[in-house]
Length: 172
Image 1: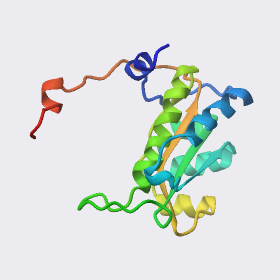
Image 2 (image 1 turned 30 degrees about the vertical axis):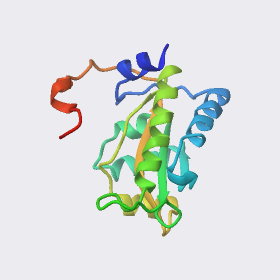
Image 3 (image 1 turned 90 degrees about the vertical axis):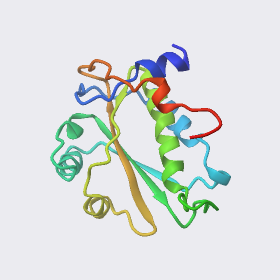
């Protein structure tokens, strides 16, 4: 499957099989995560793989009871460190750890989909309580959660805005 095919076919998965992912495949996913680019190559990230059933259940409850999260065999927790991140010179993005962690997680999603492994970006959460549960301390912060595993079902594609509404050339 080409990168384009992966991007165009990937879906957010909210129903998972309990099957574990072979170690070789998991290692490959983590290698791609590790090799994502980051601003000034600071790599201001850590990633926690949660597989413990009780922890997954507590995390799902702290994600406003999105219990499908606990159904996945794993939850990837993307954590960023603002102190170690490159500090932008623009007026809006002052600190790049959020962007850097998101790029790494997206690399993970694309390689996962190539291997038939589904993911779902999770931003709706009580990040403070999940941090406490997992022992994450300042200056580290949860950027996103990502349950992953083999899909039990794959939803239909969702509509996209027309390209003319999202692209312009030379001026806004």
